[in-house]
Amino acid sequence: MKKLFSSWIDTKCGKMLAIASIDFLYLLEFEGRKGLNREIQKLERDFQIEEGVSEPISKIQRELKLYFDGKLHSFKTPVKIDGTAFQKEVWKELMKIPYAKKISYRELAEKMGRPKAFRAVANANGKNQLAIIIPCHRVINSNGEIGGYGGGISKKRWLLDHERK
Image (cartoon, rainbow, N blue to C red; front, top):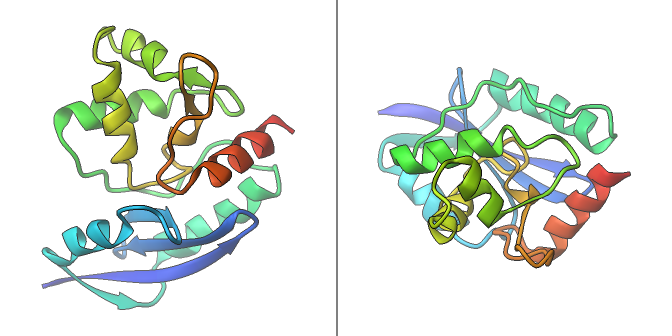
């Protein structure tokens, strides 16, 4: 069975769990994220996960420090993205949202050429396993309200405020 490494990373917005192989980051989530145990169990079906650090974990630790210090706006850590074709399409579009910008679920669906699929877009947004790297925190409700976030509304608000500074 293939092996993945897991490590907790302290950030200015709370602890984050990173899970990676020797080549790719598979998961980056905030501690207490709704559904985190389910995400770990899904990885455990195909991998043995042990505590430790691999190169992608070391790289994301460095990049997160720079991000939280306001010195990094996009990430270069190699990631492994696992999802349906539609989810991957949504996540690819999320990665196009510029740093410190916000977009609504409806606007995101329209950019994808699927104007009526905003609920499906919101659902795919919530399935993202690479917090901050795939910036789902930048998506808000059409009325300007923050909306949901797997890591919690307070973390989403913190991230949006941090990027706006």
